[in-house]
Image (cartoon, rainbow, N blue to C red; front, side):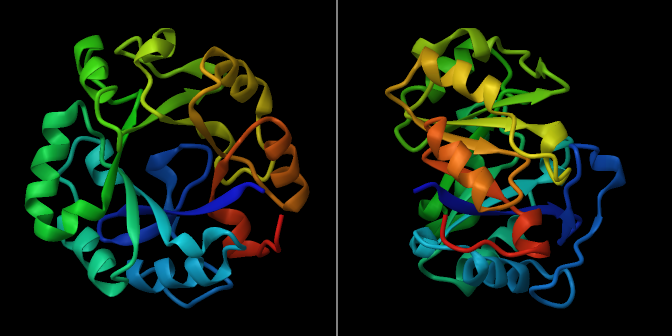
Amino acid sequence: MVQVIPVIDLQRGQVVRGVRGERHAYRPIVSRLVEGSAPCDIALALRRAAPPPTGCAVLYVADLDAIQGGAPQVDVLLQLLHAQPDLRLWVDAGFDGPASVRTLRGDLGVAGARLRPVYGSESLSSAEALAEVARDPLAILSLDTRLGRPLDPSGSWQRPDAWPPTVIVMTLDRVGAGTGPELGTFTRLRAMASDRTWIGAGGVRDREDLRAAAGAGASGWLVASALHDLGLGAA
């Protein structure tokens, strides 16, 4: 069974719809689940809509402001954590290394203990930063790609020995595109370190896609559009 991990993309304090990684064109989310684009409302609606076994209250948050060089949206993250006390956030806030995670956790206070940092390969600054990430059991590495090309200034793709226990394969041009998951790259990367927990991102449309992802060895998949538009039953 592939775990469906709901996703919200945050931009200027509201949830936007991610499409193909073209962040300049993102617009406030329109969902069949709930009115408006308020982060807490969307987060709760996604949690209710996601099929089991996502009762374990995990939400993936892409802080687009921070990923594009701005400040993390600390107030919104705190609102999400306070609204659902059992919620754990997987957060990509454009972390260039562990120091930026420590800063964000400090800003979040006690609630920062419920944050797992997602280090996007597009944001990691160096091989040294990757080596430090590998020593953190809570760290998640996202191997990011667009149009078949790795986004990888730190050389993360070539260092499977330094990948942390959880790895995401993020196919940005499949996000919100309704074209199905790209499993070729996922399968190739997983074969380089099959002892990790592997999560996919981008393209899932329905239960058949989730079954295909399970067949490729995925433990979970990041999903947004399919939940907002169609809903997913148990995979």
